Structures are given as C-alpha cells and as structure tokens.
Image 1 (cartoon, one colour):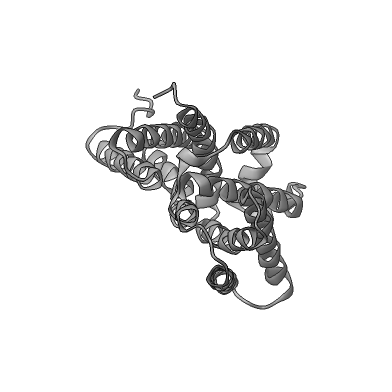
Image 2 (tube, one colour):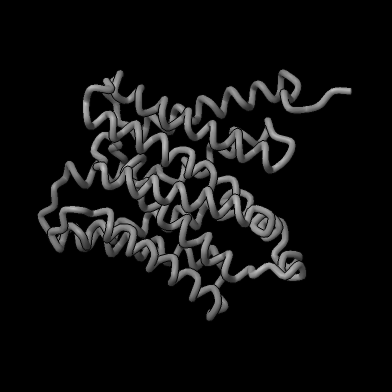
Length: 272
C-alpha cells in the first residue's frame, strides 16, 4: 500500500486535513457555523465549474477563490442588509449551485473528474495539495496557540470579548478566511456533498467525553485523524469511495463515543 505514490499522497493529506478540520470544527460547532461551512462547500461548485470552463488543470485554485468570494459576500450582506444569517446563507448556497450547474451544462466536462469533486476522491490528490494543507495546518496551529484565549472568549460571548479589548472583527475575518480555505481544500478529501461532516462529526465524538474545551480540542483532533486515516485505508482495502468511507468511519466512532459515554463513567473525570 505505502509503495504506491498515490497512497502516500492520500495518507499524507488525510493526516493533515482530518485533524485540521476537526480542530476548526470545535469552534465551528460551538459558534453554530455548520451551515456556513456547508454554504462555502457548495459555493465551491461554481468555482469548480469556472475552472473547467476556462480549461484549468488545477481546479483547487478557482474553488478556493470563489469560496472566498462567497464568504466575503456573506459577511457584506450580513453587515449591510437586514437579512437574517440563515437567509443569506441559503441565498448564496442556492445561487452558487445554480451558477455551477448552468456553467457545467454549457461545457463538455470530464464527468469522472466532476464526480470526484462532488463525492470526494482522496486518491487523486497531488503533492502540491499536500504541501498547501501542511502550510495551512501550521498557520492554524500557530494561530490557535497564539490566540486561543481570545478566540475562546469570542466563541462564548462576543460582547464579553469586546469588553476585554478583543478585536472581534479581525478575529472573525481571520477565522472565516482559514475556515473557507480549509473547506475548499478538503473537498478533494470528501467532496462538496460530504465535506461539512468532517467539521461536525469529530467535535460531536469528543463532546460527550470532554469536560472542558482543551479536552474537546485534543479528542476531536484524535477523532479526525483516526476517521480520515482509517477511512482512507478502508477505501483502498475495500475498493469503495474514499469520501463515504471516511464519513462512515467517523460515524462509527461517534456511535462508540455515545455508547461509551452512556454506559461508562467519563475517563477524564477526576474521582475523589
């Protein structure tokens, strides 16, 4: 398995993007931004279609760029209109998907390549994708290490964060930027349809086993690593789609976590 170059790239991508999504997912779920990440993922479909239309060989770049446009539009509409956040997300999600479908209907696209972006094909990642993921993982890790306290305070209560002199606006923009790029890059891993699951399921696995945020971050990262790495290996062994294999592996971990938390005492709880 490890002798194959494509499996080396796939495992490297899973080791990086799985924990990265799980790490950001703790704050995504706490801030109730799951629908936001779903909007970004579906917005990438329009970027994918534009890349195919222009005949680009690397479709990750237009997906990331268009996802950033969708995120910027979301923030602008939230700040300058009276629309509710859910309405803005639904508007941009449906509009982006409609644009993507329209463009794809006008060009002769490679259906196999399109299928891999819709449903995930980690075996098709390139080394440049792995390098970008490694850089992004480093940036997110350093950023959270440096600003964990203000980000946590902002997650709990933005007004309280402002009172404590936290620049909420800049932190929000930085978080949205990192989340958008991470979601766009992870599309190769799980596909547009399933990518949000890697942000949501690992924190859900960690939550019943955790007593504080630090424990939830650590356990979520571990769950993201096991789910992605294990799902990638299973997809190769069983010859099944990698996106579905990764998600179902994470679901299995979630079921085990839930049963364990109900039947046995919390392993992190200190006993007197």
